[in-house]
Image (cartoon, rainbow, N blue to C red; front, top):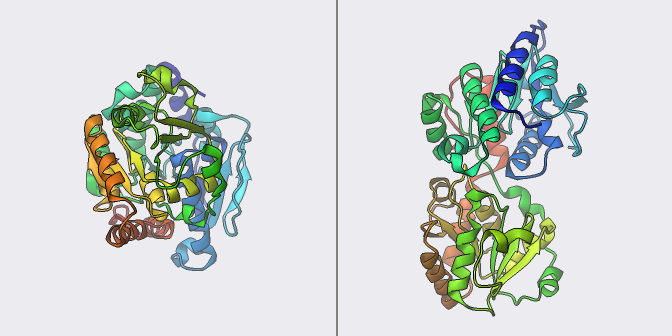
Length: 393
């Protein structure tokens, strides 16, 4: 449900009036499960993996005792289409509404009297005991990426959550950004990072190489949506400057039918539009690509480069702050607006050939630095301890 500014204000105001206290001896923790009704992107993946990691720690008695003995529920709207296999956390469908209305009214009512955890940027703005993970500050820093309705809703929600909830995020960069735009102290914002380790369980499907008609180590790879922050147009310009029809850029993800309309160039030479693929197919492309190209203008974290590193794929990434924070010394960098610089790095990669042992070790170190288990443990420790604890980063 998309709301204009005035509708958002009315909905958030109504939500404040429905919350009630539910006293009881057992601690209650509620997790906002609206992400299970949404299209799967990095934010929804994050929420699902954190929930599964929390459940595993509760089941294995690795969580603090006060949390193990609590009542844990994942509350979902009626239109939740995905399911999680959980052992300790009960899944309960509540209400009949959808979207933001479900968050602000029915979730708020169902979670009253307990601590609420929202992992996907949004949640009831007036819940009395609420921690919400906001992944980035794009709606404040880059309003040119969004339409005015989206901005009205999410800026209003962000400011209200900053006043009434505890804010957490996924990177040191996002912590700094959110502290500045929401007038918070950075020390009050814990960091529970992303990970790519879920992708390590994926079995590559090598048949995709033949189906696309590409040669191993003779193509570059882009995986992601066509949203403005992903900056696909710069990668396309770099490929056109490279002018190597024998080394195409394979573009995976999203609706690629409008790529040429949105990124008008001199033709389709050097581009291969693969559309949506399975995780197994993407894993095989990571394993066989000359390099993974990540030209993003703005990220809260940047998971795809870590996914590429899992399979030993060299990474060429933009100097966006969160991307550099995530990739460290395991990527080659270029300015996100400089297609010529990207082209030069692509040429260098082709000349270098296969990834070296030293490069692979650096990749493995970066991948190992992040794990869902560590992030879930940091979140559980935060819930069990004082309000402002050290971050997981």
